[in-house]
Image (cartoon, rainbow, N blue to C red):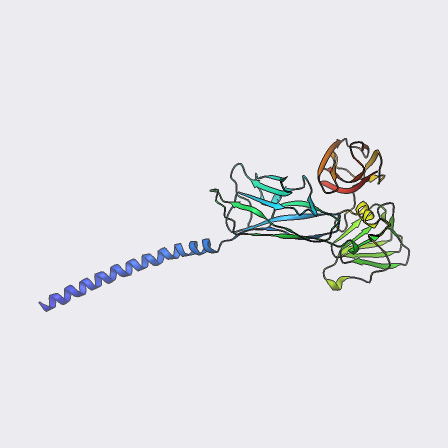
Length: 366
């Protein structure tokens, strides 16, 4: 009888252990599938960030709205209060073509000078990629220098099911540089044999307002700025002359500043001079149009230096702080005469659009 009891005991023990081992193997396999998903869900981040930038007073700067996402998303919305020292430039917001399919965009100023941006897809398509800008827009700085925050509020990143999957929203800053940091060069001739270097920790402006910056044959000029370099009408380089314009990489990348005219806020009207001549350009970008006379009375001449064939020309007038006033569609010809009767005396922004070309200049109506 003892033999039978031992046999039964061992049989039950083996059966229980077999069931236990089988169950544990199943649980282990299940955890191998579940745990990565749980950890992925726990540590997945979908962040929205407003980029930071520096800008000279009275100039425009591009701001990016970036989304870095671990999960797919089909839409987003954010409100960005614009400080009173800054202005959103109407009709400049655009989606990044590398991150969209059939997506559309709405970007408008609502009550309280708040910029509301809304990107969506009627077909519920996902945005492309996992990082980088989704929207870019332009901001114009006023005359007050300082650091101004662009804080994303009421932000959401929407999943396929309509859930808000945003993890964090990070603000950006616009640093408006001091007016004294802008170096204006509009009474300079670099002659044969001259080798000069001009620099500024902020911005350099050449030419403009009837002035000149000329590099003659055999002359050599270098421009180095910490933020931007603006080449206005009146800037020229003769055949055999040399002009290098570049943005500084670090503090040791500047040259010794030669004697030059700096903008000041004295009685000679230095601030007005900056606003009249200051434009935002990339380091080697030249205007594809010019306006004259400036200041102007009743009629403004618009000359298109180069235009894209079969593309319409649109000229927009904005207030000094960027508010849209009105626009005109113009025929494809090089010279246009525009009536300023609708404008009161003051300062305005003229924006010209021709195909892929877009530029802005300041205008004073007397």
